[in-house]
Image 1: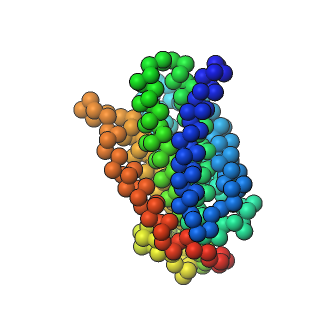
Image 2: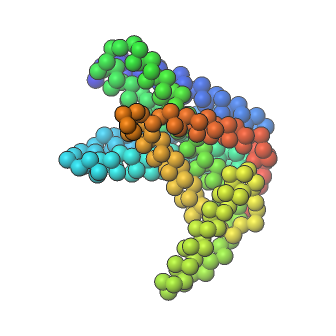
Image 3: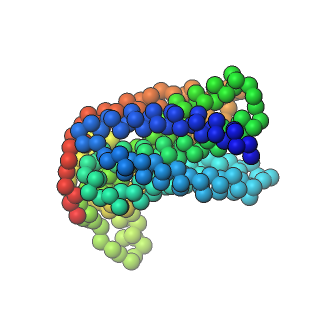
Length: 281
């Protein structure tokens, strides 16, 4: 592999990553996170991206000869794994700096930071391969622009939403209204009730930036729902940027969604979510 291409790709990829990081970091103006922890989170996202991206290049071989299997692996499974990896990087760092994690909005900051570290490595690998196969400046500008303004921003939005739900669960009471039953009927009823309650919390509290301290839900289940929601949005993004309908790429359909998502995340920083609170366990 050409070292020059790697160096050029790394330089091109790091500039937008740092620009987005600077923007998100300074949105948290009331109680900004320590810079050293932000750096650690960015590096954690980058490091965890390496084995994941290596796996992504290897696993599609398993689906050779099967378009359906290749599509499932490439679009659905990897979207879920990617969201798990990015949020795991955030949780890993925060678990070692719990005193700095004192606001609900901090979940967005750390998740976005890890996502940008992940996206930096992903873009570096993508651009390295692109430079090795193409020398067209016009194509390079298009690729860099899309991956910097489109893909990288989308990374921050998916992870930011998952990070918001994770932080909401972190600062909530863990009081489960469900009793453990061994009969299938009770387990099914509890599962349905839990799913309804979790979706209600996400819809009425989290997405409307109205944190509640009442409890009444399982933290791990709520975090899982956040990952599922981020994965669902990621899958839509992958489908729109990968497949064509009537000979036209569907990327333009998700542009309003990306812009709206960024405005929503920006709105969260203006709410009481960025006031210090104490964790209730």
